[in-house]
Image 1 (cartoon, rainbow, N blue to C red):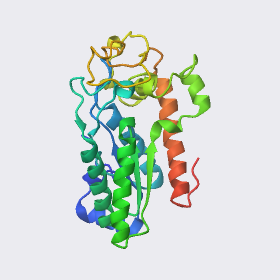
Image 2: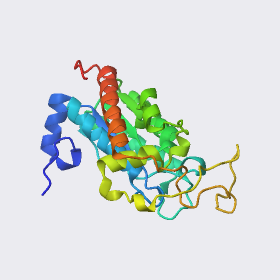
Image 3: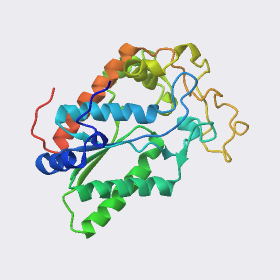
Image 4: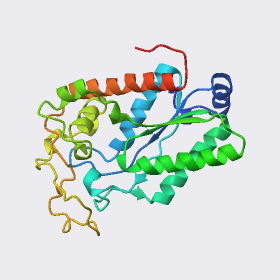
Amino acid sequence: MSTKDPVRIEQLNWMEYEARMKEQQPVVFIPVGALEQHGPHLPMNCDELIPREISEDVARTINGLVAPSLNYGYKSQPRTGGGNHFPGTTSLSAEAMILSVRDVVMEFARHGARRLVLMDGHSENTMFIIEGIDLALRELFRDGITDMKILRIGYYEFTSASTEKVVWPDGFPSWPLEHAGVMETSVMLYRRPDLVDMTKLATDVPAQFPPYDVYPVTFENLPTLPRSGALNSAKLATAEKGKLMFNEYVSGIALAVTDEFGLGKKLK
């Protein structure tokens, strides 16, 4: 039987939550993911699961709280996620994504939160998260709440050059081509190997795209798009690489959050 996790907001009762907010003013992490195909060897919740687990580990380090994830993201794009036409990929419109972020940010402000981290695991979300934050802050400022500070973090941007050399010894392909590639597969092998089936690993060559977009998005209009949905091979993925990257993300983000919010706690 699993035990109650004190960093997960949804597992607290409202009185426990209220007390934490009033007494500790914790940093609140909001994972933002997507339900998106990740090839034949990975589950469709990678973009939610990875940022949530990073958020939880960072929250334990700095005594923060983690909100339930925003599970759906903006539409998958062919050059970064294969495209929204894959079965299972379930997406929000730009408007719905923006307003979801705006509303959730404003709700946590209403609870008394003044330090938020939106932990993004789906690159297509980026500008819509930013717009949602901007709209929320405009309304909060008009309401007299001017002491809110928000970080938007794409966790993968905390990958160091030295780690890149270990994980991709033949050269880093690019983050767009890493969809269902070595990084996500390695982290999933480290954290949730039960959800990974390496016997189904795609053997496609890296995806190649023209320097423009074609609509409608179909396999016929994108003949070089791998039918597996994996944009690059994950054959070099290992749990050891996943541990290296995951721990680097947790430690780097914990230090950044501590510094930005002036928590006054030295972390190593």
